Amino acid sequence: MPDAMTTPAPPQFTLAIVATRDGFIARAPDHPPQDWASAEEQALFFRDVEAADWAIMGRNTHLAADRPERRRIVLSRSRAGWQRPTQLWLDPGGTTPDDLPALVEAVHPLRRGLILGGTTVHDWFLAHGAIHRVHLTIEPIDFVQGLPIFSGAEGAPRAVLEGAGFQTVSEERLNAAGTRYLVMEPRPCHSPP
Ligand SMILES: NC(=O)c1ccc[n+]([C@@H]2O[C@H](COP(=O)([O-])OP(=O)(O)OC[C@H]3O[C@@H](n4cnc5c(N)ncnc54)[C@H](OP(=O)(O)O)[C@@H]3O)[C@@H](O)[C@H]2O)c1
Image (tube, rainbow, N blue to C red; front, side, top):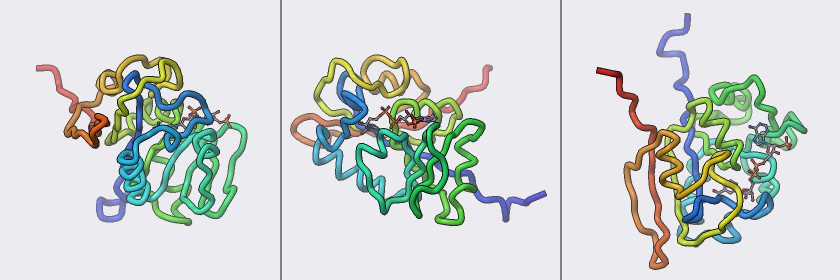
């Protein structure tokens, strides 16, 4: 049986989202944040990208901002395998987020994963209880309709995340326009008295 000295710690996954005030992450599948998010958000986003070992995203998010040199795990049911030296496409059926490190270990260890969306990628990590931290930027604009943070989720981004089991641990205003940046973590589970 492996002991604590040899068993690697499970990966930690951070979900980075920029959302509109009314809770959308894009108007459409080909509408990347760099087309509408603030410069302050983009700076924080690239800080997260640099800090992560691997980014995990869906096919549309990957194609909306193709970066051939980056370490990416791209979820897709239509293609699988290493498409580039640092880009693994994966159908996650039968797989959990904790399985991901073993799949990419030979290329680069996965200790810190960055979840980049879109909606059903968020759903997959949430369903497995594998979102350990949320970096949520809220831009002071409304799309009225578009892609939600989680499937079927409606409303203001903070309320959507709180409804999914997260609590705010810090909040700041990023610019004069009113862009807000929240760090959220899973609410601790309380045992019944
Ligand atoms: N504002 C933000 O923070 C943010 C974050 C992420 C993305 N975006 C934007 O949102 C748009 C894309 O979002 P999206 O929701 O349309 O798409 P997406 O998740 O990027 O891509 C959807 C595709 O990815 C694959 N996929 C996703 N989840 C899967 C799962 N659980 N299992 C298997 N395959 C899965 C499927 O590919 P196949 O069809 O090949 O099976 C699916 O059709 C882009 O414009 C992107 O820039 C914004």
